[in-house]
View 1 (cartoon, rainbow, N blue to C red):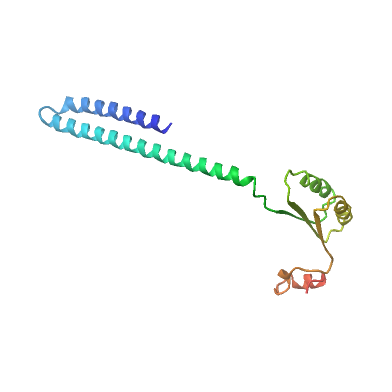
View 2: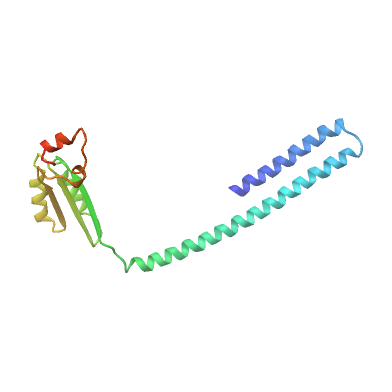
Length: 173
């Protein structure tokens, strides 16, 4: 695509220079026209040389990239049979009893050997903790962390801000 566009530009330049020379020819007579013509011919030759060098650089770059991709595919294909890292999927949820069961069931449909699903219940007030406990019996790789009211992450402890009184009332000191 790029090569075709460059050729169209070259043809357009040639036609533009020819039209310009015809216009100049009607106004300028004598040896000056030969000088202008030789400048135009040099510009066209320079552009052609630049175009050919750009095309050869592009081909070399594409060929090198293609070889790199093939070698990467070969390494990945060979290595992918041997290497299966353990993966942990983390879900943070609060009051999601409507969708948590479907979400967990769909995550355990993943076609992968070594993974665990972690669900962090962030002090839900609905039936989500009960649903998670039931699902934990069904899926042994499901890990459930239930945050109890009054527990607080370390983030809210050292800060004193306008909301610190509210956090103290909720059990975060």
